[in-house]
Length: 79
Image 1 (cartoon, rainbow, N blue to C red):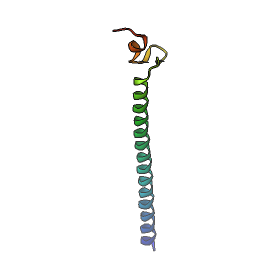
Image 2 (image 1 turned 60 degrees about the horizontal axis):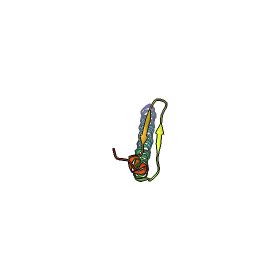
Image 3 (image 1 turned 90 degrees about the horizontal axis):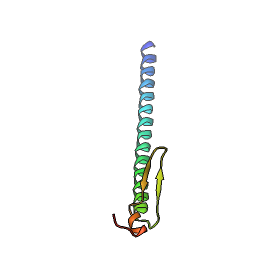
Image 4 (image 1 turned 90 degrees about the vertical axis):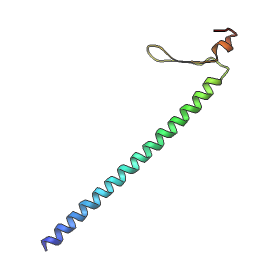
């Protein structure tokens, strides 16, 4: 009767909440993995850029964001 219908509705709500939480956990896990992968990629790029024997400069709209730390070596000057 009515109790059976209510029990089924409550079970459905619990199931939907569990699915929503599982989906949220999966999304958060994927985001955490993506952030970790991005950090590793940035670290690899930084190591490459810092050791390059080329002049690397990155600008944004207002300032120099990155300048090769090897610039004095590349130009043959001391700082």
